Length: 109
Length: 117
Image (cartoon, rainbow over all chains, first blue to last red; front, top):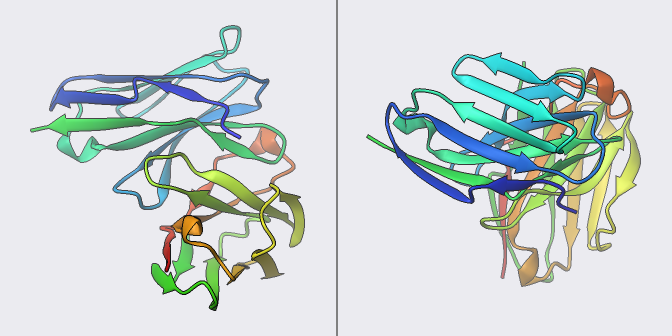
């Protein structure tokens, strides 16, 4: 069953702009992860933030987690055309990873 | 080796056929997973293997039969599928499904795009 809800469902920006995607979830989690998927192929793990962390950075990615609001955000700075993909948040509970509905990001040159 | 390899990449099968999807990883991960993804939808968990034993079956129809011959291999046997089973089937692995506080995320394969005719 799906736990996360991403917002927005689709996002269209120009190269160089920042992209922000939000994720809300319903139950307690051990960690929250973000994945990217290009053209319906495999998912690529981007970043993991644990339930006791509030913010994490990796290159052009910044993830925040607010466990009191059960929400997370993914910020991609200085976007590139190659960032065009679907982005999913996923919550990891006991033994399973459950995905949200995803955000489709289109970065135009 | 930091990859999960899935074969075949594409598969077309009739409703009376028997086929198998294969997944292999050599990262020493002890948990392996099968996910199903329909177009424009998120992946949905089907099965979890932990230390080569089936630990979770998400009420998947018996026409899907998973098998874990060893810690590096995961198969999904398909029999008498329906057209609505057409989807992208993703295999993933992680270090240990029971120690989520030590999780570093899942590694996914590129998937098998299955079409049932």
